[in-house]
Image (cartoon, rainbow, N blue to C red; front, side, top):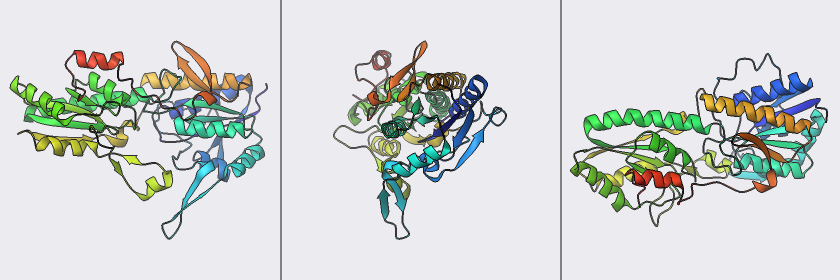
Length: 364
């Protein structure tokens, strides 16, 4: 089909590589199809309000290496369950999806590129069922999207976490301390596992394997007895103790998002260890540093490939699908196969076997 006017929005949390996708979609649509590209500002909230800006080859010229997203994003703007905070502190929830569809039609768009993670793409699929021509583009630092080998943003997050571990190694060894690094990932342990292996962590704790504090302490003590009175622990924010629950933090923001904010397990673990070993214990929470900054080369290329392939799919009228990497090819996956699915680390995966075979404790 002829592409005359296309829209693109970025939803959910930001990550490195989003601008590479925006740039690729813009250039491929304009250079290959002479189409007008409409950037929808602020994620799905922009689709409700109609806040847009035209994207051109010139306006996206210098954004390949820029972190974040020039269009802005939000992870609390689900039009099907639009949550608003009232003056009295109460939360109102309303369905604004029909309004969003009307705005889409008034824009005269041939299709809408929805860039985001599992939650954003599920919303995109619901809009597809309401008649919007949607193509999904997978994004998340957590790498927890099914049906694609990698999501852009992930490799950059792993690089950042690995670098942090390198730095904690030197100070931990110098002071003979137990150094804990807490990283993102929600319910999936991909960042913690891969960056933990890359950064030489001695203990890696992930959501998929509830940890036993006795096993953690045993590893620390074993290292001390062997002449290495320091240990590096990588812990995913969604990790939990055997028989326990994930640690969350409540705020007005999380009430608006409608999902819990994970975080705090690193300090909780530090307090547990301090009671059992005669070593200083320090916790570092890497937080949003993982999501910001310039994307690594892998994510720049992956984002560019996904954006370009998405425009090709739109030109062929293949809507209701997500573009995905099945190395070495780009493929299309029906959005219906992704709805509600999160890809976690298989507990019998070769990656975990690799870690344990070289002496890394997984807390079990």
